[in-house]
Amino acid sequence: MNSETGKTKKVKGLRFSLGQLLGFVLLIALLVSNLLLVQRVRDSGRELTQLRREQGKLVVDDPGQMNIIPVPGPQLDWQRNWSWRVYAPPGTKIDICFCNRLIPADGLPDEKANYIWRNTMDAEDFIGSLPNGKLLSVSLVKKSKNGTTKSYLDFTDGDSIFSYPLEHDVDANRASTTDVAADDGEKTSELGKPLVLLRHRLSIQEEPMPDGTTSERIPFQQPLEGFMLWLEPRSKK
Image (tube, rainbow, N blue to C red):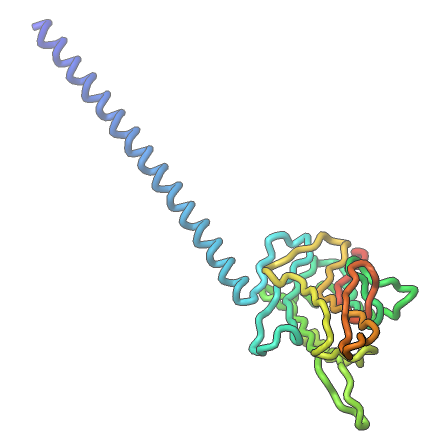
């Protein structure tokens, strides 16, 4: 009788252990399933973000920084047309700045040697159309007035259109360098720091050679003729 009771206890203990093991296995399976689901959601989120950025749609990861992304356009000549979508943190003022004279290879133009045009905008103008951000577009065009053809930079922020005659004609045959912000994807800038959108510098034309040719060079450090467009945050309200 005692032996049978002992056997019954052993069987019950064995069944309890198997029940615990089964519950543990189910718990592990649920955890693994949840982890895989979370990973799939993250991967899908990254793919969606990448797709939005490839389509020129702004994705603001840090609302405390200025964010821009290039917008592909239907034009074929990217060297003459540029567009970005811009987001600026709430409570800031942004100066859209343009210089059309001596452009350095790095940093901002010298205000003492250049006239710098500024147009101040509230940050709300940049966030009013989120999630897409405010569209800024620049086009380098040729216009004929009074029988003279000159290079112009047309700039629009979606509300206003400005057209500036360039001091130096931009000849397609003249060597130049053009640096475009975020041309390889989205870019952010810490609040309070300027963000250069476009820097175009023309070459220095040397004296004609004996064979009639003319050499050109683009010194890195020396400020050169050209134009530049940048965003400069101001103090908070």
